[in-house]
Image 1 (cartoon, rainbow, N blue to C red):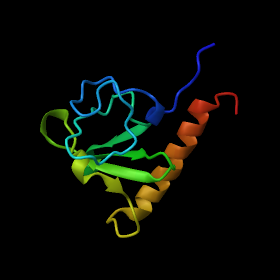
Image 2: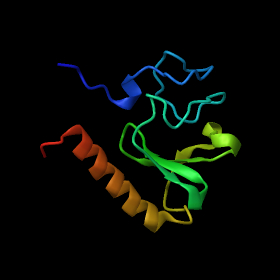
Image 3: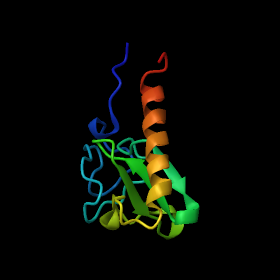
Image 4: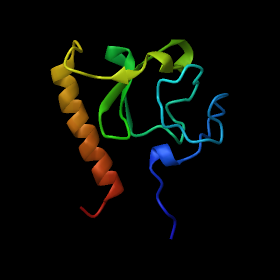
Amino acid sequence: MLTYLLAWQRPCDCRCPLHYRQTRATYNEPGCACTITCATQPITLLADRWDCALFLDQRGDLWQVPALANGTWDWENAGAVDTRHDLYHASAVIEHLLRASAHLLANPSS
């Protein structure tokens, strides 16, 4: 039986010059060029209307990373979504849904 590894336990597989073949525990490191499909990236929602992607960090808090041109991401400006965010109330619902989705994916018999 294969052991399931959480995203931050997996090595980078997207050829990021900073993280390739290493784990990635910090999402806003300068120089990071990881893709949204990198093995180190947790469950992620692409939010094109907000021009960003939303995901849960290791503690289960909602983060956002701004989109750049050509499918790249502005990791240096990624950060937690807090009460000052313009769309905080909507993001609280999204955070709950991502947590529920992550739980169901990790525990399919629940």
